[in-house]
Length: 587
Image (cartoon, rainbow, N blue to C red; front, side):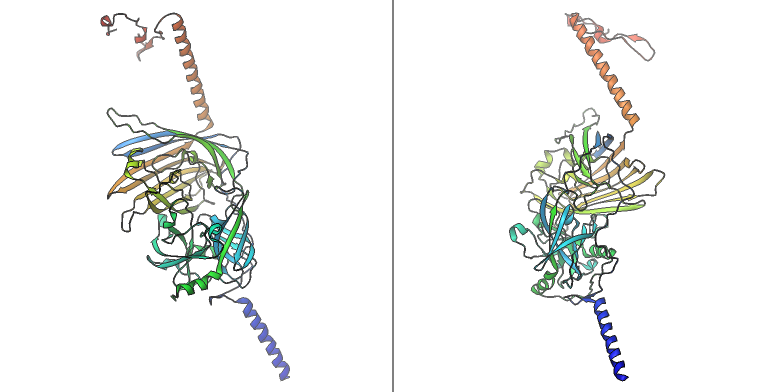
């Protein structure tokens, strides 16, 4: 009897031990994690926004806009139009600048059952993903992505994989030493892991952003890799979104807390640690590198995040409508002020390509994108995008060559696609400055078919040296109306202030942009007036031609009348005089 009881107890202990081992997974770093639950998605579910643009093929949309710029107590005005016409064509690109191509990025394992964190821009547009962990290759699937925060989570069929431990990125301090692990430039440097050392050189940015700036020289392929501290904990995710000459001087990282928050929203447990345990650089790399992942992607049509794209043809122009005052200085503008092209965007108004020309003055958007704002997925609701960027500081000679105070123009393009961050001829003999650009859109409570859309913009470019005043700051806020019944922007009134600091002197430039969609009635009235003006010009031309045939050097139009209906003679009705000194000016 005792024997059978002992056997029964032994079997119960064995079962209990098996259950405990199934409930707890131990990593190579000593952190225990529970297994993945049933709530963890196996495939990313596309979130269809309730509020979205509705583009009807063949329908021509016209937005008229006005820009006001105050410089040195003078106000300069610009006016223009932008026409948008949806097409039936399916966009031929899968992601900005990508057709059927191959690329690679980095990532790292956060759960031993095959959960991987990387950057969203690494996987966007991909039709196929693979992950190389150690010496083994896995097929990878996307289970979640936040394109605004640039975070993506992949899943592979793995088991007992080494994984990382996260630190609280709010505790990161300036000058903390960090290391970036990843697989940069695999075509040149091969597919072995690379380690880059640097320091935290900046924290925070526009719209309360917590982005980390580091002086580690990140390169293409580092994107998505871990940024680790002296204890081997992940404090950030490398985000090398910039391209151009000499960009290895600056790097940016998404804070670890942003990644942890998004991973937890997918019901994936992660390892966290508040304990610091400084180790030698060699030990840190040996500890973390087994969890690093080389991500290879094939990009093509209808890739990840590019479903339901639309193409719009745009035709935009603007001109200086300022009425000059007597004796006032007249400014010219060297850049072209009209352009045509195509825009590729999704239903939320996220522009993937095009619309950046002709650009508007004072760092405003491209006039080809007037009438398109990024929409939150619900009302009320908000969406925010923060992007690191680098601009090329122009020398004074080049600044004077352009349209006075707002002639300077940065050189490299941000993730937000601002046209003024693009220069076809980057100069290598000028200084590069880094910063952050942020834009936030918020929906208010719907009032009938109209929803109020608020736009908050902030740009912050650091000075040349630590402690310097920001070289450039721009803050702006606008309020517009979105008509959810027809799926189009109705209007936007946006005001901003541009502050440029040069040689300890700051110049403040208030800017205002207003636009509204023109109705069919307004367009019909304009066409009618244009037709009337055309007929008047044709009539006048015919009269002048007839007068020339009659041998007269002057044509005699119909006598004009004053407001009291008293006719007076036009000066053109006075016959030509052969003796000008006898000409009677009183007539």
